[in-house]
Length: 189
Image (cartoon, rainbow, N blue to C red; front, top):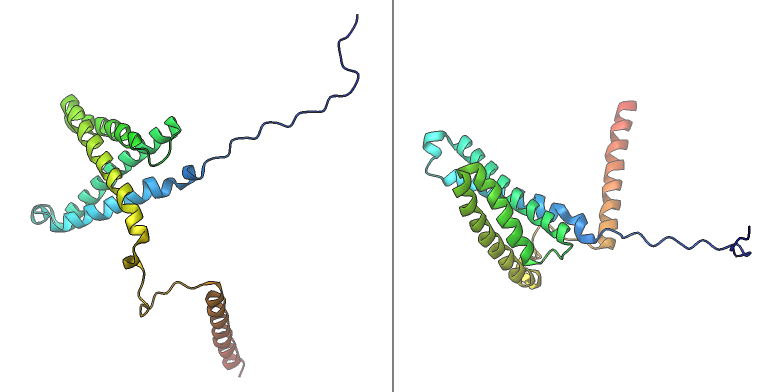
């Protein structure tokens, strides 16, 4: 039986490079967790000035608003990110916002008000979420280039470069060693 094999040993081809996760997929905290946290803080603040605070109590109504705002924003942002990953699109694609808003609004609306609520909420979330994301996209370059968000020179909070940071660490180490050694010397006497 004749073999059609090549007499030379074949060299193994290198495996194709595995697709590395995009850097945008690593930033879910910035696109889901942080907005939900900020919405919770805003909801708690809204609860502080709510007209219902006298009836239900300030702590109860603030906690309820904070939880509801955080849940709604977390659902919207999570659904938007799920759509983005499923569609393999960029984070700034507004179609992700529309689809994510429609889906999360339908789910939360169904829980809140049945089928009629699902229809109403799905359109409200799609419009409001897309408008919010559009506004953020337009405001981001303005806020990043603005000098008004930088700390003034007289502020006690300063951003240090590497040399200043190294000098600060050296001063802290020296101070720490002096206080620790001072305590040990007093105990030995």
